[in-house]
Image (cartoon, rainbow, N blue to C red; front, side, top):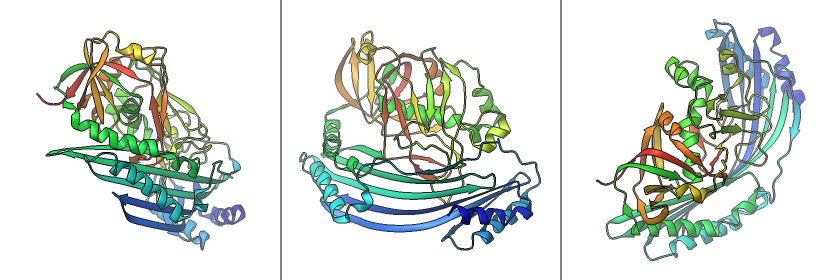
Length: 458
């Protein structure tokens, strides 16, 4: 395969492209869906395709295709497209060429597990939820796996061949008591093979239990509170509200956001450290190289409370004259790589997390994640469940918890960081630019935040 890609790249040298890359993929995938005790969908598919991306005078030409025939012509087409629109100077940060063959390291290969066995396992999980309590009105289990082999080569001499397994399971339980309907969701993802799908009975039961428990919870009274976030909600917060603002393709054409995200700016206590690290082994967002063939690494976005870095592709790195970070990612060959997070988390602090509650007279313990949105530095997130905190103790369950605020005010108001960092491998993935779900992880210890606006009943 390397010779084939190199031949296609070399055939176009006379076209004077500044840079060319070819990405080929083949994959096998399975999808299974249960609604209650009934199987709604089961499918298995195979696909192969690829793309060529060419840079000519500052503009990109991009061609995507099914099948791997006539790569020379596909490369020529990409160059012709770029030539029609290019009229600038091309800039890509230089990187050392790499040649590497990377095999997946996982347990049981899910490609060798029959559809019948996978369906039986998902039916078992669906039954656990629907049979948990008479108040469970509906349950859903969604299973997906995908095993992808990627071949990447560029005009600078890089050739990388690697395997990417991915598996996810999503659980939804709906509980009802009269007109009161509550929903609980859980998901998990893994690159470690089918073993991770065989140990999810506790998660299925937890999903149903949470839905039933929400029927007993009271709606929170809106107001300003000291709030403690569990690692899931804190991890989602740092990913969604802060991490996306650190993606350089979002920043380099927006002077206002560049000012807000100026490196060297203090944004929090000296205990606050936020990291994106695609080089961590064995996690959903991990890979030795990004989708431009750049080595991934540990990147501090906030270090000791100071904005210290952002995430880059080769193009944004050159435009902003900052170091490469290994964060150009594409969800599949249908898309070109854009700047994306990998494994993003708040580093743990020194406080035992239970001590975070001690001096709170009246506050909220917000857990899980239900939904939310961000608009630049403003955010709104809904917790999946929560509890009141009274005189340092966790008391009655509450629901309908919506947290609203300004990112930078919230970061400054973090005054407690636990010592219990948890990395979350959710099956939901990240969405951006029409590319979803991109496998990522997020994480945090418990964190305490002062002066949080909480929406609820009044």
